[in-house]
Length: 110
Picture 1 (tube, helix red, strand yellow):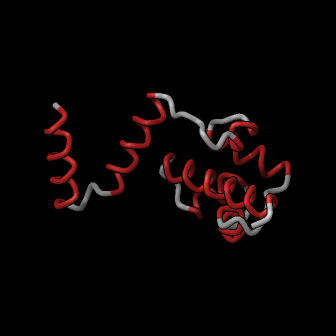
Picture 2 (cartoon, helix red, strand yellow):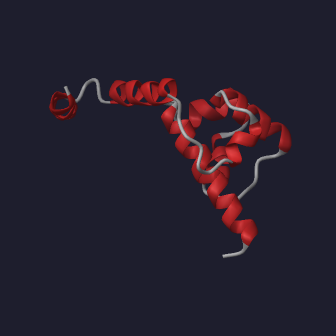
């Protein structure tokens, strides 16, 4: 894999991970960024680089500086981790089995 394709892939994976951490679907994220869901999909899949102004918008929606999108070993703050966990729990709020599993896991911590 060429360095260019690897960078596109890494950037796309990072954006997808951050988007999911914030609890956005591709559709909602695309709406907030001001591009089509297909554009977000192609960026996240490493097929396209975002245009510079799109990169700035992506970073803004994610609450980061654009340069942090390229920090592939970025450490999450406590606030970001908490937000990620809460957003994931919101996604399973109607699934009693998954909620029981989360409760069981948390019970082992506390």
